[in-house]
Image 1: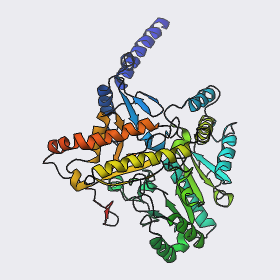
Image 2: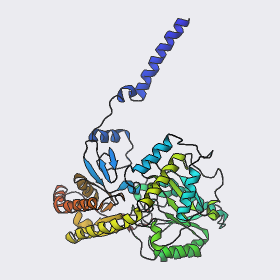
Image 3: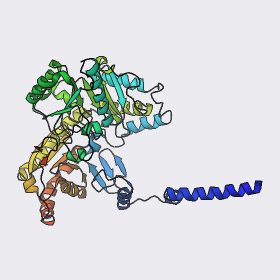
Image 4: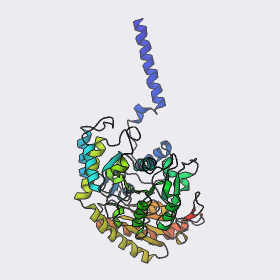
Length: 473
């Protein structure tokens, strides 16, 4: 009997292992030789990953500062910086050192217990930005969701908005992530179509229009808990509001007892040539949302800053995150803040941003029919093209040509290319990037227009499902 049981056990083990190999793609064999070529890696991603992105076809294999190498060893200059997540540059040695030291000690405690890094990080961050409290999360989208929950809770408890009637006002053209709450206030049809029903309690105003905001506050201010905005709209194409707009918003929010909520996930932490983009008008929001560069491009870290009279409306069990405030993220975030201060990245961004816009405006003078506008602050910049003269070529096509010339950038809204490199980039690399754009317009664009002749013309106008207007006109 014992021999029979051992035989059955051996057979069962073989069957189980064979089944596991079938279910998990032959893991024993597949791990023996990892694919390495760019083409093969892109094919694998296309086959096994959801198609929720349309990347520029280049594979990152190694990074240092503002330089990227693909698996074949080709070198590129990064002009996107992971949407500002690597403001400090790829694999900054001080941030990597902090990561390595902490990862060998403790990575996670959950908020069920204390750890010895988060309290220090919380004190550092609140002191640095002049707020009394912080609520830690991981991704920027989580930070936005957190701020919305805090605003609603404050609205019901402090402002005495009737149950389930709290309103959040946001701006047309905004981008705060792709969660269900956020797309419920989005003007991006791709983000909203097919995902209904969207969440109620959201109203919209035009970005930069303080008069419309004032009118809305007067009409519905008693039920408005918060006004959520980007000080500079990133995904919309680095849109800068009129001078004085942020101050007007601050005054209106104070007058109507509405929380002013600044999404600085992309625009903050030195990106715009100020520590926060709100600093351009020296205003203090009631809540600030940070992310991306807070993790130094190493680990997701986000945070919501507010004073106690706002933050303490959240009680235990009402909001949280297993990983929010973990010791590894806290250690990395403190090192990330150190780098921003020690390497004077605010000043670098301001100075290098001026250099870049001078170069881009020289290109605009050379190609006035193609370039509609150059705009930006610090190293937060965009080039908007004329859709008519560019047609049938798109901004994505421009980025493909830039890639071939060793510069990596990403389009938005068909006719806009963002140029937002790591703040560690050198002046020589900026000039190299500008030269690549000039060469694309001078050499590549005429050929691209011939190749794409007959295709549907590119339009930068998009009719919004929400309001029926053409945005980005």
